Amino acid sequence: MTTPSASAAHADGHKLHPYPPGDLAIWVFILAELSAFFVLFAAYAFTRLKHLELFNAMQRTLDVDAGMINTLLLITGSWCVARAVAAVKRNRVRTSAHWLLAAILSGMGFLVVKYFEYGAKFALGINLDTNLFYTFYIALTMFHAMHVVLGMSILAIIWKKAMAGGYSAHDHRGIETGASYWHMVDLVWIILFPLVYVMR
Amino acid sequence: MSTHFLNIVWVALMVATVLTWFIGKTGYVDTGGAAAVVAMLLISAVKGWLIVQDFMALRRVKFLWRALVLGWLLLTLALILLAYWLGLK
Image 1 (cartoon, each protein chain N blue to C red):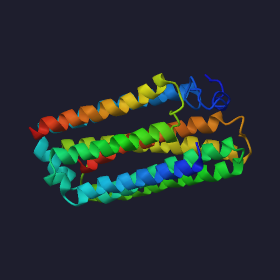
Image 2: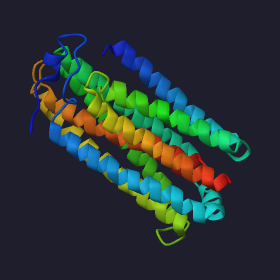
Image 3: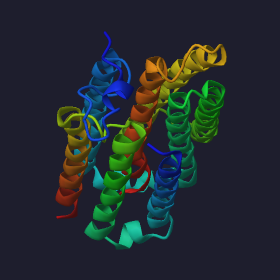
């Protein structure tokens, strides 16, 4: 499923493009993912209502510093991907590939921080059954981490193609497709971080 | 989208993230009540808005697509606000 070139429609500075960047299929997938996270966030917020003391006490046991570092890493990854798209539109394919690699490294940094964060919790014997808060914490963050892994896999595929010179200023739908998915992963975390780590 | 503008958006997102962390670390999240909750949700709204409009590059895409993603953002934050407001009562 493809859409007309965004760059062609943007040739007129004021004209709005009828379709978002990248393949239209990824946007169907993105909207489905956003719907799933909407349900999970609503479930967390309204379940918390019935267990306020538990959720507030357990939230204090989370590593908010790790949460912040991971937010900074995902935002930086998103910025790198946006720079990769900007570079390929200027026909700077090699530069675009370097930005994509930087985004992948940001994603790896996110997973490393998550590994140590989970490790500290699991060492204390915390698991999905510990209590309702930790059920949500582990389920929500692991579900999101799976999306980070998928996003990194997509970025790795387009990075490889970019390194081989497979994109240009006129043919960069693949990069825009991967970029759109990666930004969705970032967007979801923008809500997950304050909701699970900070707000009480 | 100029790269300079993308850099500005990145810096703004980083600063906003540190602001949310600061609200948590300083204890304002415990003393601020509804104001702290609203502040964090507003920060999330601004961050989400910037990501959707400038990183996802939906700013120059027809309204329907922007409405779907920005609508998701605002609806999610509104529902969270409702749940937390009910918890503060």
